[in-house]
Length: 113
Image 1 (tube, helix red, strand yellow):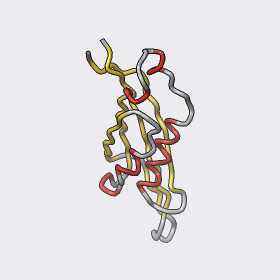
Image 2 (spheres, one colour):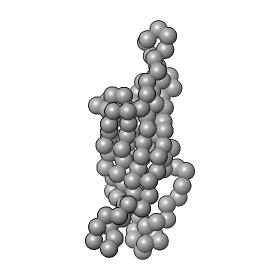
Image 3 (cartoon, helix red, strand yellow):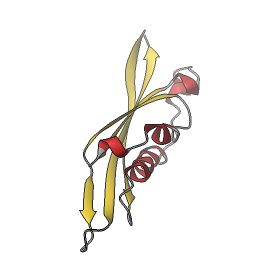
Image 4 (tube, one colour):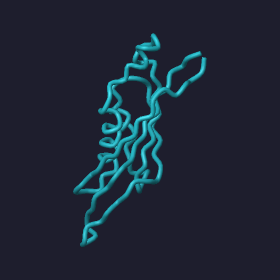
């Protein structure tokens, strides 16, 4: 058996009045996942927990993301989280605060023949 990609979901999340990378990353993954109801595992006669979900997050400062909080968003399946440099940060006029934008993708795979 081998992992086969079944679904690719893409989302965006923000922390409008702050620059909390984890908050934006969690919102980005929710955006990617909450627009659908995946029945692919059931259609392939596999339990929901058989889904492998590889999450990739893009934010300006990858080291500031709490991967465990991002992973906790997954409703089922086994997940991994990779955080890379990306996203966008817009500072306020004073340079004391800003808005942070995170991008997320979730690749759902199943172990099938």
